[in-house]
Length: 322
Image 1 (cartoon, helix red, strand yellow):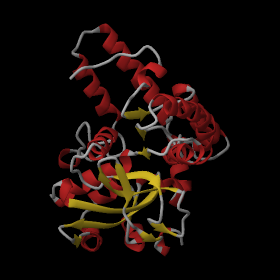
Image 2: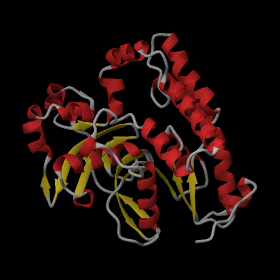
Image 3: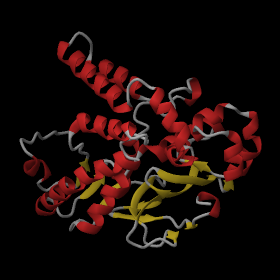
Image 4: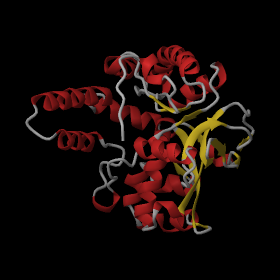
């Protein structure tokens, strides 16, 4: 495989077929402010939720739209796979306020849920269809289909017998039994804001501060050159894993099962290879009833060469918002 190095963004984009788009406007320092400022007012401090997420979007969207114009000039036929947070808002800005049409946003949340369910059910991931719906960081699993059978009702029935699941999904069992769905872990910020805020206030450092320190340690170790770079990086990734960090052994997610896996699955599917039905962010069309066709939603998709289409989800279940 040949690698080409570019000296600027324009050169890198020229005649590209795929663009992996990831930016952090203001770097880690602004992420820390997105977390610390809301906390100082007694609000949840999180980079994609609430006041912090809004501030991040205000900084990020104008810069993203500048990059979009350059993509349109240098590689108008390219597929843009957006990693940039807040992913749903940025993807919607690209699709509805730029000339780009071939844009898909990704998040590792749904794919991580699927990976954990695969281990819990002892079923290969490729045999699971995750009936997932919602927005980025605001979604629910309303079906777990294996060979045509929905395993979610069985999971709900036996949930009280597996307390480990409460740690996996980060919600109380009695709450899940009432909801009859598996919420994305980010929904804790909306369902239990007081509890989450209390937990945040007890922590001496925000998530952004911890990641900033880990990044600095990573680059220092790489610069020193005392260990193999891949070994250093793997250790760094291990320390950064936090969403399912309390679950070890069979539930531990392997390297590459987050953003990387979803991005490569998209790349392969859009290149004509047969893949599964990843959950991504794209125009709703009519996947979720009651939402506008141009709204960007997070749902499973069908992939063919040069084509991505959302899987129909139906109306929002009342339990998701009541």
